Length: 443
Image (cartoon, rainbow, N blue to C red; front, side, top):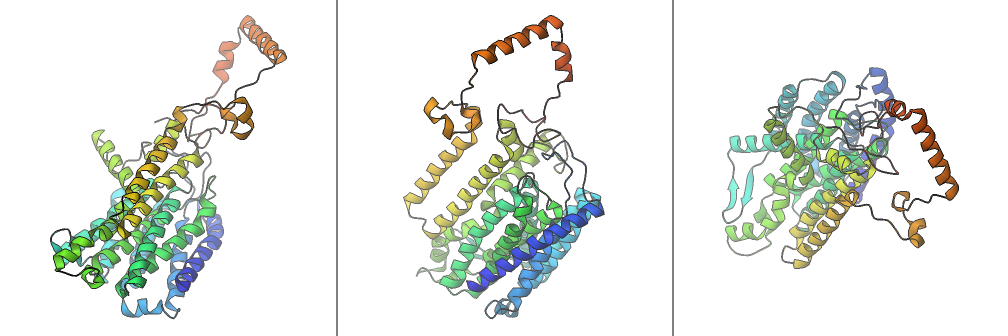
């Protein structure tokens, strides 16, 4: 565990220290696109944050290669080299897109090539545990197609959710933390060395996200861009592929009996890892809804719009920071709920706890629909928007006099003509104002 923590800290430190110089480089290189209609930030912000994250990945792998125990991962497996090759390719494509805005189909082709590079070096799905059937061995073609599909879906799911400051990095960090806990349990508790690469990938991914988040929290000083979002999506998919498709469930020997009984009993353990979409369920749901929404409108599935889940949260009335925290909450609930269920699937307390937390999450989600007013004695303990407005008699007279003068002079129409509404995410407040009613985002 100490070596994993050291690798995580080195990765986070390198990513954090390089993000500042990368920001200056992005400004000089002109990687600061103009604000688009779907954006929620007010000022042009440099991209290319994925450069710092990629070098953090390289630093983490380099340090792990020189540690006593983690060095065995590089000696016994070619998966770290496969990950580095695929990550370098997808990172290069992302850097070009951040600077030159390359076509979506070209990016899709690059994602498939990056996945193919990892498959050629041994990072592929070899078998799957199927309930009631047993361990199903896949042919090379089946394993390749499933691996490529899993990588492409995960990359685009993370890329689609990267719409608010700190959202993608935080959600992936939560998912990788849950992934690390389970992978480490398989590697350490059951002594399965095949789970060591996935554990290493999860630790490095946490370091990449934690090192970048201080620069990316609202208000963000730099964006990770496609070079960062596609990179962390690929690393997350690589870890899931490594532990799901290459760790034989029969090696765990958790239960006696036939092979079919063993796989059936370990299904609750492997279902959360069979597809990383169950861990990053929120980005996956956003991806599916975006494809359906755009196809229904007759648009390309890759066309950008303002219909993502985080945009909807802003339209409901949540502020930028609160929308991000709500997405964090749901990601943690799904990821760690699946992790807890995989450890003890027979406990009803786990299901009851998930249901209660889901109800709390729904309450937080619909909070802006209600405008409760705190009692007088509690107004000093709540935010200003929940307090009653206090108007003194003198202020009321002044307001009435001003209103009479405006109506007499006929200047009300002129004042309305000069007023400029604050549009959420375009040219006004980022997310919503802190006090008072919130504007609805333009679609």
